[in-house]
Image 1 (cartoon, rainbow, N blue to C red):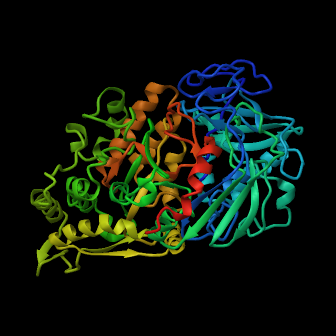
Image 2 (spheres, one colour):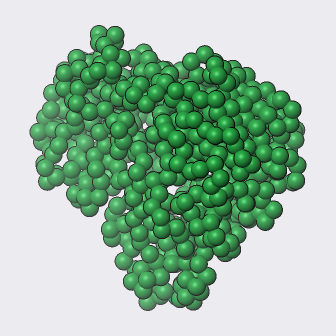
Image 3 (cartoon, rainbow, N blue to C red):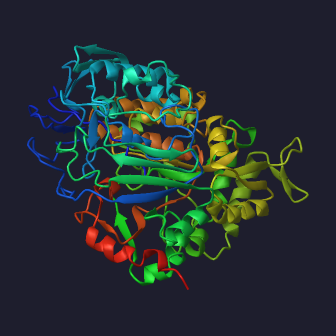
Length: 612
């Protein structure tokens, strides 16, 4: 499990209408929310969903697929080691049980100027890097400027509303904002992981990092073998161990990530007791793959942790930079050809719900037809939008689950004929005689069982389609270069969408190598709706703008929507203790610990449990 990337938190803010009022900040820090007051009082001692007295000790191992060659997760080059984010602290820490609320970590407080023109963070005087040097305002400024100029393209988009960053003394950092900066800028800036400027001096930040870095976070690298394994050791001198936002977290003395070339091999390692924990994302495995002796004996547990988070969009993403997918009617036909009901019944054991929104499982998902404030946003662009967008709800075909999706395929064929594709010699061809042909690129062999039946239905239409699985590192390079036709995409969403939408769907991001705009979305109406989302000044504005953005994206058919679960399916050896208080995020592995009594009983049988 990788460490979460925390949203920023704010405290002591001079408030705007869209930012909840905060009180004066004690040394322990406070918090602020975008859409409401923080739930915790200023003198809170720990998050209520953790065990503040969780025991420390023990070791845990996780599995990863592929390999790594760098400890720098902030750049486009190289493949970063899993868990590298444990090395650095962020300015603020997000609550796992509140929507868009965060609390101070490196930052003791943060203030928004009355004119919304700047955000000022004040660092805690006790904040220290692992070498004992203080975390200074100059480190924050250097980190920010380095990420914006040398980091992944994502950072340029995410921090585009910041004009300048400057240090005032050793403990204050002032971020000057552009006019119309997003309402959540204190939260966005609070996500910043702060790097030690002195340590990076003389090193090429843009190159994959093999040296072991230092940071201010709870763990440091203990050992590593590139592409094989990496272990992190909990720092006994961690400066923030007793802060309210850290109590009950980071309980394992050692965290190890073991790398495997194939998911099936990783599963066998888990069954053998070499891996402690799995976040199972394959429904077939969950339904049929855990009937082995260790489970039967109670040595391995299976448990579902439900969450209450927006699930975003997962689907077959189509690269509109390719001629085959430049026409939205072709993309719509691809969606019509996907038989979700059959897949859910036969492949997924009826585990999932169909995704019908880029903001699924939340109030931000559009429904019905546009009305009120949403309609007012879309009306000026009526001529540039499909007429149906204004007259009927967005919908996907619903099949009977039998595998006979002939009506949907016939509808798809009619759509393709309207786009100029006709069946010639059992193949779909255009007026120039060119076949409708493309490749579906995957990085995980387990996804073939989902993709191959879809490809078969496409072939029934007369589409030439192939499915190819490649190595994860090669796959990442292909994604960075947008060198693919169709692939499986996942766009997570939060309760407060903002600047990240530019990186997902913005026209500028479509031209930036390594951006998250994989489908090459370059649409002036999408751009306009993104800016409405970013500029929203209250919850009502945000909901209307997000509904409008969602609707425009859906009706342009950039993705063949797949499914969502709304829960985590976890399998783990019975050595863990974990909080029992439900949390909005479902679970947080950093709040778990080794239960010595359980571990003693389980480990005496562990490596012999699966012997025949």
